[in-house]
Length: 335
Image 1 (cartoon, one colour):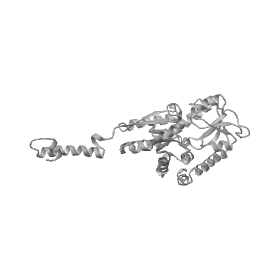
Image 2 (cartoon, rainbow, N blue to C red):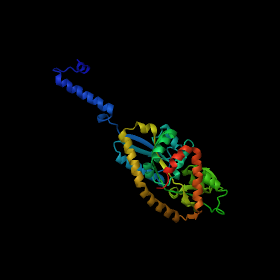
Image 3 (cartoon, rainbow, N blue to C red):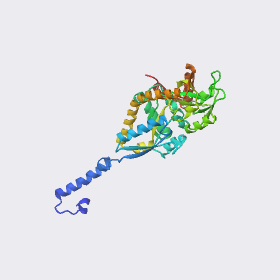
Image 4 (cartoon, one colour):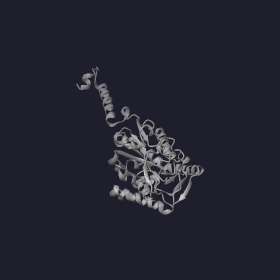
């Protein structure tokens, strides 16, 4: 008599025992193979956004998370906290260690451990093109090695940076200006004669109000939503770089997800890449209108302004990781 038969004493074993044994084996197989009653339950993912919801950039990440929760219902559910819960500049560390499962923010914030990660700010093509030509695959490999993260996609591709000031520059120079900066344009600001000052975005409004800084580097979006428009007088261009903000998931968490959960998140990243250019066009128009209404004047610094900013940043990226830059740079140009 088998183990099962020894434990279940049923008169007239025969076909009855074979049926019971078959049911038990089927249940075991379902658990081992990961389907049926043992299929992965909906996983809850905690995401940290480097900006609060009301700021333009973050608005689109929250929108994506909400749409993902609808489309991936029963598989994944994303809840988002802002910098009030996890400080902006520390969010990538929280992601790397697994304190949060996801992070939305710029690669410049973790340039200390991944110096060439900000190469995406120099991209001239769309995120959808980068997925098709293999650039995103390279980014995934490097993010996994450098910060224990899986790179899903990015938002705000194609939104340019400008230098904003609360007073006019003299003879086309920023000599002596104190400019809120980030590593992405430190070298450029220094070459223009200004002094870069590091601070998280939420602190900039007070700094402008108290004239602790004379201006800031920032993309086209978000000036009004932060309240900076009340103090800003000039926007210097042409715009340079692109305001790439990545959507990352902790690599250990990514590996732990079931195949259908990973697929749903990837599908939603691809959906975002197709939708974003339409959102960007509408947002660009609204942001320019708001800045005009606030009296912010555009100052054309000539084509060399943009060229020099990007040339300096390519040099910085190459110093950070020449081999990686050599592989990915050809994949970031226009078609």
